[in-house]
Length: 518
Image (cartoon, rainbow, N blue to C red; front, side, top):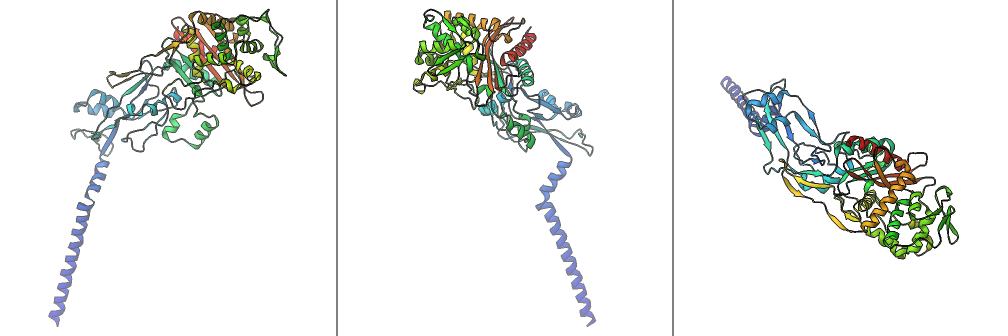
């Protein structure tokens, strides 16, 4: 019996030892085989660091190859110095001063032009454009990110002698860069001056010889840095309240008296004589049982076409529209490409509105059209194109926003040459219009646009809105600087009479531009 009990204890002990060994083997199997890779990766992660040195997305550049948005966030220079002995390419060493590229920041320019992308959760994921040029040229800008991996100690210092790994996607793709026609310096001036004076509106500067859009500013600006990182509720609310998502340079609005330039062009092209006798403005013009008044009911007396444009006489231009006829008025507007998109590669561009003759069945409808009210609407960019045609002696030019696509070595991948359009008006008529528009600024209704720093010509306009006492304010014109001519359009949405007009804001912007160009 004793021997049996002892044997039982031995068997139990052996069984227990076997069970213990089995458990240990099982645990080792679990740790080494099943979870081995996971723990190895964790251990490696604790002693390694990865630095993204290329976001994988191309840059949006200004006309002088300066970035319109990107800045770089530093991590420290010690890593770069430590990597010098490893024969890393110089461009990689330079980039290794950064942890990641900050694509948008509070100083980003032309936010409605560049648009934005959604920041990926993982910096090694490719990025897609959601608006603006980021979206329109997503395929060209899209590329795959790259990173470098190093071994570090407990104090996050690189351990020399253990090598460097460069990480790329298996199907690595290098992006292209966009070269726009925007001038970064002038864009900054326009945004700085404009945002201090304009609540809602747009400013467009255009080179009439090339059609290049030199600046395009919509106010309030789009907070791309917020949208990139995930906008806060406060930022979203601010953008919603100001309709900041709209690129107002491409939105359509009633033109007000700027439309009178087209009536003047039609009259000159038709060689339409002045009214028999003389046109005498007594402050209003009757259409049936309705009277259309000049601004503040001002009586201009005897005026011809030149004088009427200078003082923006409503009565004269309503009478002129009746003498021309509806078809000729509308035809001239269409010749200047109003009522159709300019074709710039930005989403959301509106075509404007030039009504058909059938939409203007009554005298009052034509009268409203003559002074840029009613159904007539245009975008700031369209009016810039209109002024460029006049500057170009009557020849159309297509607005251009992107001039070329280049690779990382600045080799041209694709060119976007300037596009000349058809002749719209004769050179003689264009010269006559330029003389008239010069008078408008020098001694007429837009004298607040004049400055000793430049020679300017243009036309101001005020367009009524559905809100009592609130109008849109316009100035469309051009300036002759020392070495170039620039077309400029300033638009103020829902302007109030106690605030600066578009003409006076044009002056402040162009004086700053003239100072920068001198």
